[in-house]
Amino acid sequence: MSGRPKMCPSCGKLMGVGDVCPYCGADARKVGTKLAGAARGIGRGAQSGNPVTIALIGVNVFLFALTVAVGGVKPAEGGLDVLSPSTEVVFRLGLQYNPAIMAGDWWRIIMPIFLHLGVLHILFNSMVLWTAGRVVEHEIGSRLMFMVYMLAGIIGFVASYFADIGGAGASGAVSGLIGFLLVRRWLVDGNLRHPVASWALQLTVYTAIFGLVVSRVNNVAHLAGYLVGAGLAALLTKVKLSKRGAVGLMLLTTGLGVLTVAAFVAMGLSLGRASGDEIIQIDRCMTLSRVAVTEGGRSVDPDAAERAADCFKGTGSVGLGGDEPLDRVRAAVVAGKDAAERGELSVEQRAAADIIGGAEDFDAWLRANSGRYGLRVGLR
Image 1: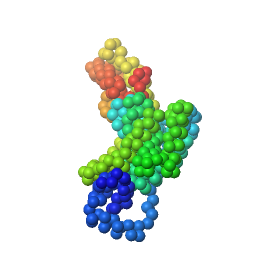
Image 2: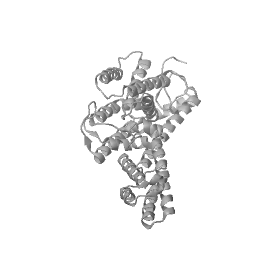
Image 3: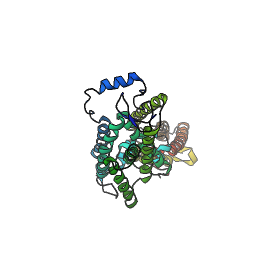
Image 4: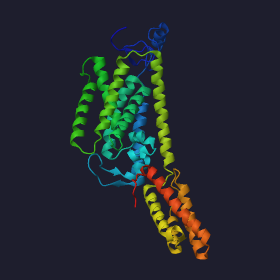
């Protein structure tokens, strides 16, 4: 076995030093593989497009345009937040918010890769993705380029989670592509004189300086993504993979694709929840409901109950299992008011108990789920 990376005779990718291609699974030692590769090489033209790079940029731009169209822009807060979209809208689409993740919104580890917090933010990431993504996609193929990008992005936000940093952006994923290019050129060429390597090295230095002098930059995601890309470059270039290893890479890539689609679906389903402002309004209604219960929980003040009922009229479903205690309090407020006015003591007492019990259950639900609405406990 030669110590130098070689081209796969089947798919034409730079397969590293092993005999089994990590991209198509072909065994380069087989005569049939070599003959088939030679036949396919006759008349082979230039590679047709960069579908994954183009698709990723397209999704990023679409989601940024959507956030601006729906929520408008807010005043810049520094860093890359020029022409930044509404935080509420970005949150609904998947902003990394650790209390929400802890409460069950796992997809907020993946969706931030596709979201951006300002026009300069998405412009810079798109420019780097357009350059680095095309080179990586040309060298290792669309499937594995997607793997590098998504693994770097996901691990970048996992690292951010443990560092208790929130936010959004493709910077960690893009940093993975830069790290991949730099290490791969070093392993293939033995130096960094290749134009791609020089560009990646310069961008690495600029990014490091930028992260030190500009506030609100997620250096943890940048570094984690960069290291992931560098490690994958070493794996795909220098490690001799068995056929089982090559199949494993393919399965990993497919799994990342499925996970990404699942994250988008979960985000879409979450849009049916109430907004954070609606939850705050409902919590105020719960306070009014408690005030309506008098005499140690044995009776209901009809005027206070009417105010609580009027408050609830402008509210809807909250989702995530919070509707049961909410509906119980809504119904009990109306029933308690009517019973108090008619002098039906037993019905009034049951309604008072339902108001108190339902409000307590709603509080417990809110403590467990407030993060998923972008809120913290203690709204009142």
